[in-house]
Structures are given as C-alpha cells and as structure tokens.
Image (cartoon, rainbow, N blue to C red; front, side, top):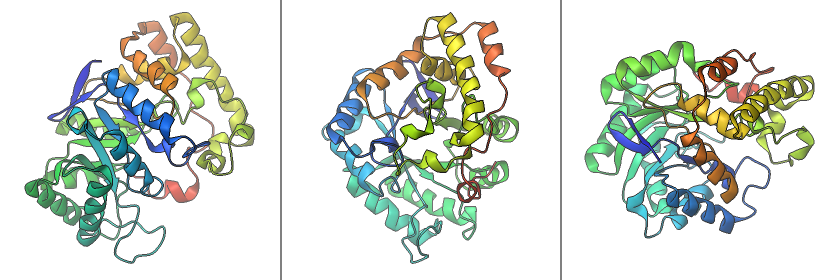
Length: 325
C-alpha cells in the first residue's frame, strides 16, 4: 500500500471508513465479528488510516474500533469526530463544538477507543453557535496536552477553513467527494492546496451506488439513511443508474471493478488525498484496497470527468443545512 501525507501526517493512500459497521446502512451492527475481521484484514493489507466518530451508533462504533485495535494501537492513525452530539444540554440534533462540549467528547472517545491520544480529531460539522476560533483554540489546547495530535474539519467551507487554520494548523479536511459529488472542486480544494491541508474524501463510492451493485432502493432496510436521500428516490434513482452503468463500462474496459474505477478516479485527483471507503465485509475491503494499483488511461479519466451530474441532492434538507461548501 502506498502512502501519502495529510499536511505532516503520514497515512495509507486508502483508508477505511468504519461507520457502516455500526450505523446508517442496511445490516449495520448485525455482525461485529465480521466487522472486526474486516478491520484486521485492512491492517494486513497495509491500511494505516481508520475513520470513526462518536455519533456513529452513537458511541458503539468507536467501541468496536477500540476492540479491534487492542494490542495494535501503534499500527494505525485513528481519526474520530466530535460535535454532532451535545454534551452541554443543547438538546437532540443540536451541533455543539463549545469548549466544554469538546472536552467532554474527547474524554469519551479516548475511553471507547482504548487509547490515550487521538491522531486526527475532526469537528464533524461547523457549529453556528460557537466561533470557529473558539473551537480550534480548545483543540489546540488538547494538542498541547497530548490528547490530540492533529486537528481536522469535516464539511467546512473555505472561509471557515481559513479562519481555523489561522488559529492552529489544520491537518485535513474531510468532505464527501466522488464521481457523483464534486462540488468541493470549485471552492474547497483550491484552498486546501494553497494552505497545504490534506483532503480526506468520504463516500468515494457514492454510498455504494457507484459499485453498480445497487439496482433498487427496495434493497435498503428501514434504518438505512439512503432511504431519505433524494438521489436514491424515484426518477432520480432510475436516472442515476445510467451514471453507474457508465462507470461499469469503464471498469469492463480497464479489466477492474466499478468500485476500483471510482477509487482510482479519486486517487488520480492529486497528492495529499486519502479516501476512506467504508465497508463491513472482508471481500469488499480487499477489492477497495486493490484500487491502489489501478491506473486509468487519460481517455478513461476524461470519460469519467465528463459524466453528467447526479440527479437529486445527496442528502435530505436537514442534513444539507449543516454542510458548508
């Protein structure tokens, strides 16, 4: 597995998102033993970058990751996130990146993960009720105390990134990015390159859609968040199948899988990018990691670059309101 750097943080070029093992997707939480085997297999194949968050479950995903990493802590860069759960009484669904909230959150994450430091600690969503300077100031204190080694932002816009970076160096920004979610290209990615901040694309497989394996929304159970996503509904779903079929055609030409094409396209977008495809299955993690060796031709990349935009917003209105772009 090749490596890259997010600012000065060394990580495997492909990481592993663990959310779906416990939360949000069909079958989540149904087989922790297979999820742990998946994490162990990822480590065997050279993955050193694992992503979780306190809100996944909530809490149980960090516990799962902590269990999987017992005795292997030094092999990995652990990234986790705070701010979507209020620890100061703001109430359900309220963002909370207040200093007191962060300090409560970090202690919980450290305990669940079974570690005394977090490698990369992200603000999960920008809190409109707490100035970013105040949030990052608290994170800087945690760095000085040794509880956090690097700080990050998730789904933050250009101005927030600049303001945060002026208080303390931001190591990485995590945003959704894939063949069907490309809006960070215009405003966010140029700022990251200018400031020397790494980029961590989540959902590089379009929440599984770009693998070509999803052919009907009826495949999802009631707990799957994709049932609320406009892209997975009605006519939008049917229109987006054509996009997935285009990816499948490039994959057939290249002699690889659609998932590997989608990941290879992200990896071809430059240095200091480390996508974190999520899975809870050993076979899928093996398939995803093999994308590290896939090289698409200039013509294939151009075909993918010119695919039409996906039909429909990627999240429901409530989720979109807390995403800066």
